[in-house]
Image 1 (cartoon, rainbow, N blue to C red):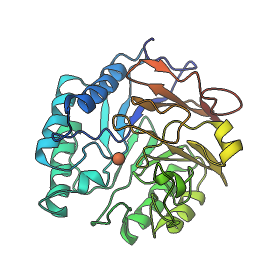
Image 2 (image 1 turned 135 degrees about the horizontal axis):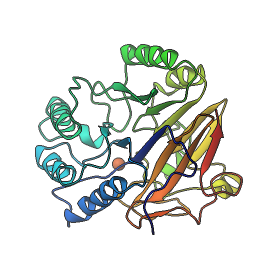
Image 3 (image 1 turned 30 degrees about the horizontal axis):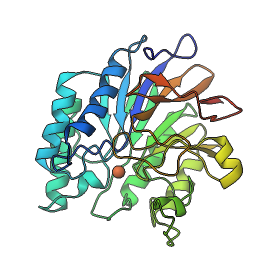
Image 4 (image 1 turned 90 degrees about the horizontal axis):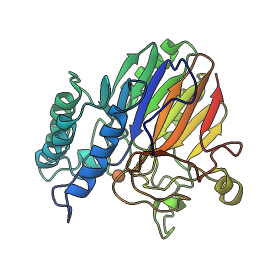
Length: 310
Ligand SMILES: [Fe+2]
């Protein structure tokens, strides 16, 4: 138990990140996901160093209906967790009985109202304390996959060029294909057979090339509802929540309020804190519902968090 407190002095950027809150008016108990979301907002608001950003990596709602967004907004209306709030769009946010356009319109209307932004697209970037936060989003209905399109990929390349080697943080609901144990970990019964299953899909390699062409890129995803997987699982099973390849760091978050599988810690309430310092980036899993940092899952070099020199 305890308030969020950065690991080191002189933190330059402090962010709280959660994913897959799945606010749902048709949930058997709608107050359950609302409770988990609210706990993470309150926990962020009480940080010993004021939180710069609270953000989600998609599926804030289980269905992008106005009813669900109203419930999500009610949580944010009660507690301002950080100076800035940003909501990545997820596939569930774009599913709606009235069609994709209605769901996209609901996402833009409610996320702008919650965040105090004026986004006109599902993809956008913000510069906070000199660091780029880049949010990717679908441009059309693509089922469970991402569909970013050439215009957005070209824009992403420009955005990363503009980061000038400083750490840049990219948030996309889906992970690159085949990472974090996918496709076999997409389904709790490991029945997936399509190599693209659970990932970005057909644009994964194009996206990967852009990300790997730049230094100090941190790519965050959610979507697969996997628990927190540490370095022991990487040794034994070949995958983890934190992976690193060709200079690119990949982080997959558990679902905060929808249940998890395949993890060393499958609790709900888990997200991460991003701490950026002059010479390093630290990413620390936190259980926002229990108000505790991760202690039981070794993430890197036996420590319960990821630390990377930049
Ligand atoms: Fe989800």
